[in-house]
Image (tube, rainbow, N blue to C red; front, side, top):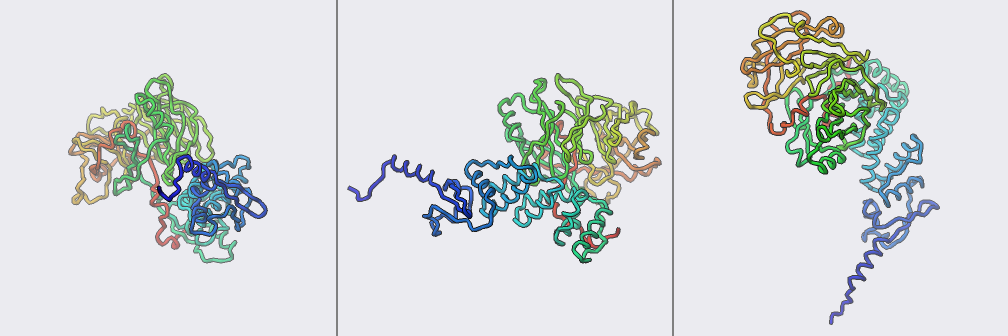
Length: 554
C-alpha cells in the first residue's frame, strides 16, 4: 500500500473552493478592506507578484499599503476587483472626472490593465471635451498610457482654438511644442501667436520664436469602406488614397449589437446603412434590417481608429436608410433617403458632435431612393439628383437648386444626354478620386494636369468635353466650372470640377486621367452601399511634426 495520503475528489474540491474564497486584508492608514485574494491576483499584476511564493507576503493575510491613496479610490478599486463595475455615478461631473484620474493612477500603480482600459473608455466617451483635454493628455503622458495619450492629443490638436488658455499656459515647454509643432493642429494664426506670447509671459522666458511655419494643409486621406465575406466574417476594411498610394488602413467589425441582430435573423441583415468619417473616427448611421420590415437601426455609432472601439454616439431623430451622410465642419448631416413604409424623405437631420444636439435642416428640394453623386466644396454640400443640382448652404440653412441642367450648357462637343447622377465627380485636388470598372478591371481613377505623361504608366487622355457654368444663384458662393469629359480609350464619362471663370480650350488639353489598378478588387463588391469616398485622418500621422516649424512667418 502506498505511503502517500491521497486525497479524495471531494477533499480536493473542498480545498479548491476554500482557496477560491480566500481573502486578504488591505490596510490603508486606519482603514481595513477585505478583498477576494484570487480575484485580486487575477486582475492586478502587482498583487499577483507580491502574493506569489517569491515574496515574504505570500503566506500573510494582511498587507499594508504605504502609498498616499484616497480611501475612496482604494474602495473603488476593490469594487472593480469584485464585480468589474466602474461605478462613479454618485459623483458630480467634475468630481467624477477627478476621481477617474486618481483611479487611473491607482490602476497603473497596481498594474491592473483591464481597469486602465475601462477608465480610458469612460474618459473617451464622456470627457474628451475642451475643459478636460490638457489634464487628460498630461496625465496619460506621465503614466505612459499610449492609447489615452493619442486620444487626448488628437482632441487637443482639433480643438486648440477652444482650449482654456490657462491650461495651455501651464504646459511645459516640451508639451507646448508638441502641439504647435504638429502638422495636424487646427488653429487660427492670431490665436496661435497669442497663446505662445502669453505662455512666454507666464513662464518669464522668450525661448519660443514668435514665427511658426504655417502648414498648407492637415494630412487627410480619402477613405472608402470595402468588404469581402462580411456576411460570414462580419469584417470590413478601410482603404485610403493619400494622393500617391491606395492602401488598406485597417479592418473593423460592426458593433456587437448589430452583429448579433444580423446573426439572429440572417435573412434580414442591415441594409442601407451609411458610414462616413470625421477626424480619426468612423460614424455608422441608419439602415433597415431587411427592406420593408420597418425595423431600423436608429442609432449613430462612432468607431475610434485610435482605441479600436465602438461607442454609441446618439439616437437618430428619424428612421432612414440609403441617405447621404456627410460632415460639414463638426456637424453630421443625414440627408433624404428612405424612411418607414418606403417613404421618400425630404428631411435633413443635423447632429453637432461637439454639443450632442440634433437640429432640423431645411428640406431638400428633390427626393431620392438610391444614393446620388455628391461632393463638398467650400463647406457646402452639392448633390446631383437626376437632371437637378442642389446645393446646401449651412450658414443660411437653405438649399439652392438648378432644376434643368440644359440651361447650363455653354458649348457642346457631343450629345450631353448623360444622367449626371450616375457620373463620378472629380476635382484637381490631389486626393480627389473614385473607383471605376474599366474593361472588367477595377481601378482607382484620379484626374491631374501636372504629371509627366510620357513616363506615367497609368495615363489616359481626355479627348472630348462639354463645359457648363453654374448660374448666378450658385456663383455668388463660388466660381467653379464643371465639365463632362470622355476619355480617349474607354467609353467612360466623368464630371470634373475646375476653378476657372473663363472657358479655355487648353484646359482640357492639359487634363488626363490616372487609372491605378486595385489590388484585391473582390473586396469592393458592395460598392452600391459604400461607393463614396470620405475624408479621414490616418492615426499613423498623428505625431507628425512640421519641418523647421520654428521658422514661420506670421
